[in-house]
Image (cartoon, rainbow, N blue to C red):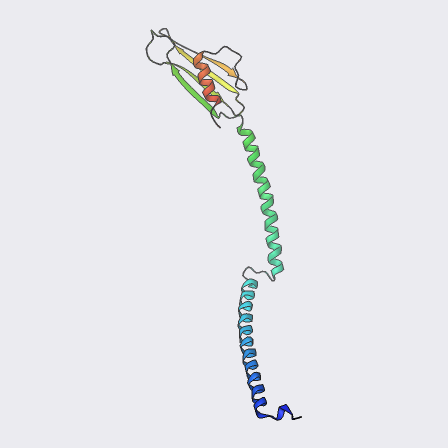
Length: 167
């Protein structure tokens, strides 16, 4: 049986195959070096010490401290908003005005009714009635949108208008 390694054609084929494998390995090595360089560049950019911090661990701890601080600030701001919202409930938030003529023989719409309500529909209805002799003004308390005194049609209209207003 002849030795295959002694044949020149076989040696040539082996040499060509080894050369191809060497070129492929060299190409792979160049690709890996290039890829490693890109990763190293990204790593250096990620780890750069622009804020006087010595490690990524310091950066993470600083971020966690900032998150804790912002959480506390959020809670304080939210509590302040709730406090202001509760305080504003008593402010006048719904207003309605209606002018009308009570007496036909007196010209123009000189009489009026004004309703001023807070968020809970508590407030006052102020009415001014104009006559030839003068003007009479009076107020009626409103509690939860209701009045304990008799209301005229105009007063009922203006109260309903105020109650339907969105705050």
